[in-house]
Structures are given as C-alpha cells and as structure tokens.
Image (cartoon, rainbow, N blue to C red):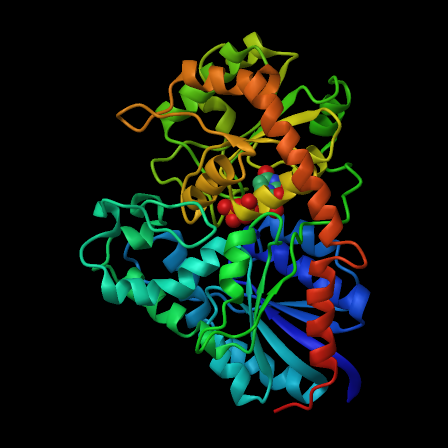
Length: 465
Ligand code: UDP
C-alpha cells in the first residue's frame, strides 16, 4: 500500500460547494504532500464541473458517484442537496471501502450537508472532519440553532427582535434561509437534526478568516461541550486561472475597458430573477450610464432555478427588454449563463460587483478588493448580505418596494453610487483593507496557513482509529 497519507473529500452538489473543496484539496496536495480523492455526488457532471476538474493536478483524483432518485415533491435547494448526499451513502461506503484498502486513508472531509457520511468514515476507522464552505457566522448559527429551536416558540420570521451573537451583526428571522421559514417543514427538522450531529466530527474547517469575521470566529472558539475544534483556513478561492481561450469575447471586451469602471453583475452558479425583475435590472443598468458585464439567465420565479444546471439554458438573451442590447452597446456586455468569474474579478477593468452574496463570490471579491452591491436571493445569502452591508460595510444595498421588486431607478442609483459616489469610495477603501488582511492570513506565517498546517500535522501523525 502506498504510504502517502490520503484524504477523501465529499462536497455536496453545486459549484459553490465543489470549488472550495477543490481548493482545499490543492492546498493539501501542494503544500502538505497528501494525495486526495474527491467523491462527487449527482452525476452526470455539468459543463462547469468538467471545466474546473480539468485543471486539477494529477495527485487529485475524482470519482462521480452514481445518480440518485430524489422524491418528486417540491424541495428547497438546501434540502435537495442534503437528500442527494444521504441517498448516495451506499456508493460513498463502497468507495471508502476501496480507498481504505488501497491507500493510507487518514480522513474523510464532508460538507455541511454531508453529515450522514460521518458515521461511514467511523466504520472504516477514518477520522471524520467537516468542511463548512460558508461563513463563520452561518456556522455559528448552525451550531446554536438546535438550542434556539428548544427555547423559541413560533416562527423565527415573526420574532420581534433579531437574533444576535456577541460580535456579530443582528440577523432578523426573516433573513434566515428558506428551510428556517417554516418550522413544521421536513427540511427544517432534517437540518436541525444534522446540526446536532456536527459534534460527531473530529474538527470543523471553515472557509473564513478572523479579520473578516472576528466576532463569529471568537464565538466558535468558545469551549462548549460537544463542539469539536474549529480551523479557520480561508479565504480559499479558486486559483489557477484559465488561459482565457474559452471566454475570448468577454475577457477581450474587458481588456478594452478603462480601469476600475466596469460593474460585474452575476448571481452565482444558479441564481435567477423573475421576468419583471430581469426587466427592471436591465433598465436600471441602462439608466445608470455605467459600464457593465452581466451574466444573464432565463427568468424564473424560483430564485435557485438554475442551481443544478446553469448551462442548460436555451436563450436567456431573448428575455431582455426590446432594444436594450442596441442602446447599451459598447458600454455593456451580456454573457449568457456563465462567465469566468475569477478572471473577471481579477481584471483591472472591474471596479464593482453586483452579487447574490454567495460565500465563494464574497470571498473572491474580497481577495481581489472589489466592492459590492448586495442582492441576496436564497440560502444563507441574506445573512451574508447583512454582514457585508451593516457589519463590514463593504457593500451597498438596493431597497426593494412593497412587492419585493427592486425598481430601475433604485438600481441605477445604487450602481452609480458604488462606481462614482462618495459612499462607493468609502466602501471601496474598506474592501481594500480586507483584501490586504486576506493576503496576510494566507501568507507563510498567516493564521489560516497555520490552521491548515496544524491539521495536516495531526493527520500525518495519527494512527488510524
Ligand atoms: N461562478 C463562475 N461563473 C459564473 C457563476 C459562478 O465562475 O458565471 C463560480 C464563482 O466564481 C463561485 C461559484 O461559482 O466560485 C459560486 O459560488 P457562490 O458560493 O458564490 O454561490 P452559489 O453558486 O453557491 O450560490
């Protein structure tokens, strides 16, 4: 048997989960000389998955687990993800059985929705760890929610006061993700039950860093019964830029724009807007007079409609208002479905990011010092948006009117304000400060580098249980 320590990673479905797991794998292979296998649920692979997996070093293997049959009931994206991993348990077990006989398997690292796999790791005498790819504040919520569930009556959205942890921004119940809006729901019960089992992991790795979330990280370090050690290793964001050949138009267009004057507009790997909202956004961008690069998807009333198939869109451009492309030609570019986000955020022309506040997008923007307009859609994005606008103050936030729609004038105003207003200047300066802090924690002596080294040391020196 090869004596190189081997780690198995189990991200749950969705690019927002796969990308940080790949970066964690790269760190373990390149800096700590592990070999890694990534187990990917929910085959067949999407185009976006194939593209990122193509760039992996040879010491990172990946296996697509067989597809599973989800029930026909309408499910929230979070619960769909959670069930996919649970239904994949037999194939996860099969893969671990094989890895544990052919490699020196030291750890299985599962995602926040893969907690059921922890017991499988234990069966094979492998140390189970949890990698939480979202914010430290979300993790703090997950760890405390079982207790809150026992003490709070009624729906969280009806609570008169926001929920607050020391050092964190207060968050209203209505800003928690969808499964927490209806406590009688199966998804709610399933998630609370999974949070109670976080303590079964030997440690929790979180993709964040102290300068970004000082209060939440302090909160996570409070020694409480049943809580495993916490390892903040962030910001882990996608590295290894593509050569741009796949995206010639979009990057070439950026090359021709002046420095810092383009606002990038994108809602993550699967966020979608309603038809009316898409219309208002288009007209708002037009009215702002600013330069923009916009990733457009087919409209839908379900904001996570494209989460599992962002590339399977017919013709999103046809949903734009009549004459919009002609009227904005030269100062705006629209890209259907997907753009090379890291390449765009690191481009000199990009000066702002209108984002759905997914955690990867948030970290990617932070590492590149790009200030934000926060436009959360689903999952924990509203909580992230509150942290970014009210806590860190690195984002501006457009207001919606009574019907929940953000109007074109408001959009134009907030885009102008970020790109050329006084408020935008302040937000930009703060983001520059966070960018420097992010570089520091990832330097040789930085806290995130040290956290991961501690873990690697532990895994290399342990005898399997
Ligand atoms: N992404 C990309 N191009 C796109 C949309 C998304 O490269 O057009 C990447 C983005 O850089 C990020 C991930 O997909 O790494 C999205 O993760 P995030 O946590 O921001 O949001 P989610 O997709 O999970 O809602």
